[in-house]
Image (cartoon, rainbow, N blue to C red):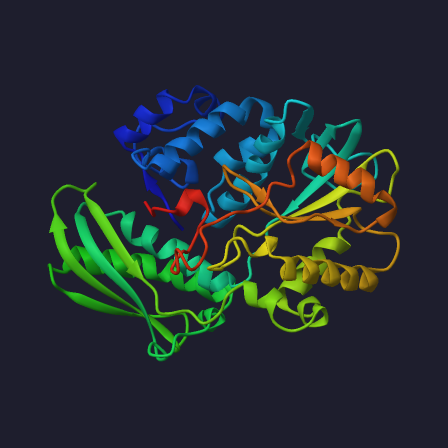
Length: 389
């Protein structure tokens, strides 16, 4: 759906990152659907420059994980692939540890992500990065890019506002619709937006129908430029009344287990991607909360949430039945500075080994963000999207 212009900035940037250049073949001109092209074309954003430095450094040792990042064409899957790279980079930066992408599963086992040895212990790690309000998060992440990267010979400044009948009281993220409906809407929106911008004049306003009758998009063309690369998009959302933290902070563990998050975790546990129990290695499921839509990015480290997560996992494990699908579950927020919640030992007989491995690899580094009283409106988003390009 999205494609990005291959500009001189892209070619200048790729020259500075030879490891990335070896993996991808960027044409001399035209457009590309690769998400890495968007990043290469926006190195004036400090966080994207840092991302490219990290990626270039770890590509040779990341094998399939790094290649999956640079070859990704879907923005959401790009973020999920980055999570794997961030976790691998974190582990590879521990001098006493050895970590590498799992080349192939052990005989008879399903595929997992990372092999790890540290402190005399071995582990296989599977990473899971679920999204709760998928339709809403697609809109939040892609609307600006759809307008900014329209394939037309104009520059422009556009204000975008997502409107809802409940603007005065806020709205619930799930009201936007499911993933399929939102993707279809975004695909139709793109040509409509291009046609409108090409024929509109500064000051013109256009209302686009939304994915359902509960929301719609209002666009105002503020300025028009001859310079195609001169584009600014300002996107505002109505006040949101839902938050991922609510799945874990309200109700009892049974409610969480039966919620959207609980069902997704249950499905992942059932896949047993690290195989059956084996005393030769630990099986760890890392649950990355980076794509959770929340204003409380450190909530996985809060004592109340930690307890509820452990109780929820116990309920989910009981639903699956023996043998245990994993030996431990580790909540995380993966980024260039990855942080973690408290590890949940599912096999209590191996708690000491689990704690030893977690401490040796700094998988116990807690998430610390500004206190809400000091920063009441903080909305931390993974680094690659903080300043939307």
